[in-house]
Every structure is written in C-alpha cells, then in structure tokens.
Length: 377
Ligand SMILES: *Cc1c(COP(=O)(O)O)cnc(C)c1O
Image (cartoon, rainbow, N blue to C red):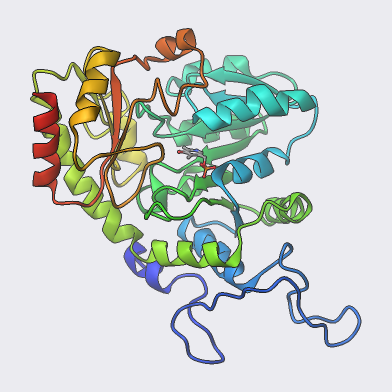
C-alpha cells in the first residue's frame, strides 16, 4: 500500500458491526466481563481502549513498526520512553533537542540519576567517543528545532548496534510521510502528534512506534503503569488528522519551497535555514533518508528588535508556539520555545536573538509571501 492510501485505509478502519466508515469514539472507562477474568480484549481504558488502539495500530503501520502507543502529549510519550531506562543509566542526546526534552533531562530525570550527555549528532564522529560503560540509549532529533540540523539515522543505527544501545528518534518535524526512522535502523520512533500528525492546532498528543515485540511489551507495561494515555476523543481527532497528512505535507512543502526562494533573495534576511537548500550542511544526508524536507524554515534578521518589528507587522502568520498546523505560525525561538535554555548556550547552538522560525501552512502562498514582504520591507 502506498503512503497516501495507507493513511486512509491503514490500521483499523471503520466499525465491523455497523458498517460505520469512521472508527467510533469509545467513550468508556471499563468493560463488562463475560465471567470472572474473561473479557473480550478490553478490561479498563488505561490498559486499552478500542479508539486509541485503532490509532496505535495506524501509527505502527505508518512507521513500519511492530506496535504503536498513544500518549497524552509529546512530552508524555518521551517521558514514558525514558522510563524504559533506569537509575545510573546514561543516555546520549542531540544537543539541540526540543526545549521540553532538554528540560525533562536536565531538571526532572536527573533527579532519578538518569545521566545524560548532549552531543552534536549531525557530526557522527563526535558520538562514539562519548559512549560510556553505562550508556544505554542514543536519542536523536532530525531535523532539529529551530536550525533544521540533520543527523544521519543510518550512521547512528550502526553506532547503536555496535554498542548495544537503543536508538530513539524524535520524528516530529519530518512525519512518517517523509521519513520512517525504523526502516533506517532505529528501535523507537516518537512524535509530538500535536504538530503535523494532528495538524489543526486542536489536540495535544504523543505517538510512539517500536520495532520489536520485546520493546512493545515493555512499553505497554510502562504505558499502563504510568498512565499518561491519550483519551478516545483525542485519539479519534488524530485518526482524522492522519487521513489528510499526505495532502497537507505536499501542500506545505510546495509553499515552503517558494517561501524559501523568496527569503533567500531578500536584503533584510542574512541567513536562511532549510534542509532542502543545497548549501545546507545536512542536505546530502536529508535527501538520502527522507523523501521531503518539510515545512519548517528559520531565518535571521540580525537583531531581536528587527525580529519583533517583523512579527508585529504580519497578518497571516500567527505568533504562537507550536508548529505543523494548517495555518502558518511564526515564533522567535530565543524568546519563546527556547527561552528555557540559557542565552550563552543558545548562542553556542546558533540560536541568535534575531532568528525567526516559521511553520508554513496551507494558505495561498502568494498571500504568505506578500505578508512577509510587507513586514520585512
Ligand atoms: C512539541 C514537541 C515536543 C513535545 O510535544 P508536546 O506535544 O508539546 O508535549 C517534542 N519534540 C518536538 C520536536 C516538538 O516539536
């Protein structure tokens, strides 16, 4: 089945009993047992719910995994995956991971002695030297936020295999439509489904897919024990969002390419970051591991004042955190998504005060370009 078809016909579709073509919302917490201990596959909705299961089945199929899991947020998904590790284990992470993941590692999981080191995984030669005796996992994000740095998933998989590490990939920016990390050798792929997968700025959620039965059993145990599950209504909204994921990603990328061309040629813009640009340092890897470059672009206008001025003049780009929606969103990472990272560290990473990040939507691209042009001039 090709991807766009899979998004409509994959996983569990409709309802056998009634013929309903959309999966029903099973708004239920518990299930009648036919006799003591004899149930029909469902006992209690933390453990399993048919609407959530339909979604979990679908993400497993889209990521070409063995099983899928749905959580109440991207951070709930990431935290639950981290619970596969234990105290005194060590994990290596991409140095410019999502701000919330950085906070989770440095301010929460450190309390449980889960040790970590951040490394620029876009340079594979850096990674192996930092592996310790207690290193158990390698956690990468590609492309990253907001500089769209690319990490070679296959190279990371080789390193992980050699040292017996779990390879975990945050695939939020690429989506399973463009990139399937399990097929490049990752063990676990996860998403903030709040972004492209949901796609309509109306649900907070997280999804995970794993590549083995053993990991599936372990993660189901954690999901049921920790309980950070996605509810049936939100699960249904994601199933609905996924039906148009392919269409949206195609439309978003077509718009993005035109906006990138426009920004490249603008006097007020010093640098444009987009992995689809041949002079982007990650371009060569990006073309081999993903079939598209996505809809995230960052560009530098030189200073915090200029950035603020540009933002104040825009009509169609909504000033907001988050990304991946049908409407175009804009943000200043230094003041918003990455504000929890100390300024020195931000500058080290290249996140300057004048950096603007856009998440391109599916509006008419001519309106978006005119909007940007008006604000930049
Ligand atoms: C938003 C985001 C998260 C966190 O997801 P939430 O749904 O907001 O909890 C994790 N990783 C990336 C790359 C994100 O963009």
